[in-house]
Length: 185
Ligand SMILES: [Zn+2]
Image (cartoon, rainbow, N blue to C red; front, side, top):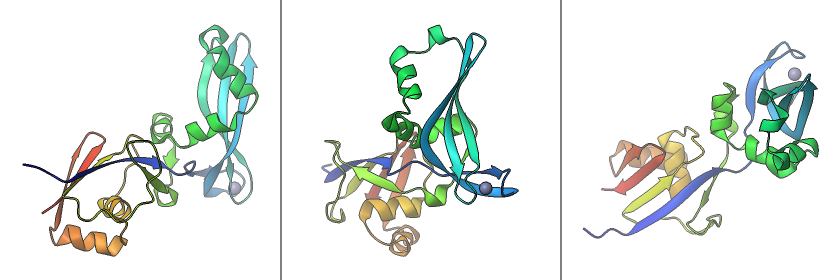
């Protein structure tokens, strides 16, 4: 069978916000990426953290990247980037859902905004892709998205219109690892 097919990659548009207990506010707050690292030498071991900050009171939250690592084991180029607070690298960590998952930090899913990229790596700003029979979406960031949000983003329609399509079985979704396939029935 011949399908008219379209393929997308989903990426985070900006650093994820983290939900964590704030010692300043004495309650759970939303923390944002400062774009800075902290490197601490402890004997002959190094600790490296990505620094997040409470949106309300600016208390900081250190997210460990490396803990008690031998300097010999740390790539020199990477170490230099940590020391100079390389903004691009800080963003790379901030947009990695799997990084926060690994470190057991809670990503604020509601604040997460996602962008679609096409095969060439360009952000997709095109028209709605209804008219395709099958859309393949690669969600490599590991970010968990509700079906409605995913369909709404990919088809560029409202959340309620996406819900309607799903509820009325006009489309089917099947997921395999980090790939979701949307098919029009
Ligand atoms: Zn706070």
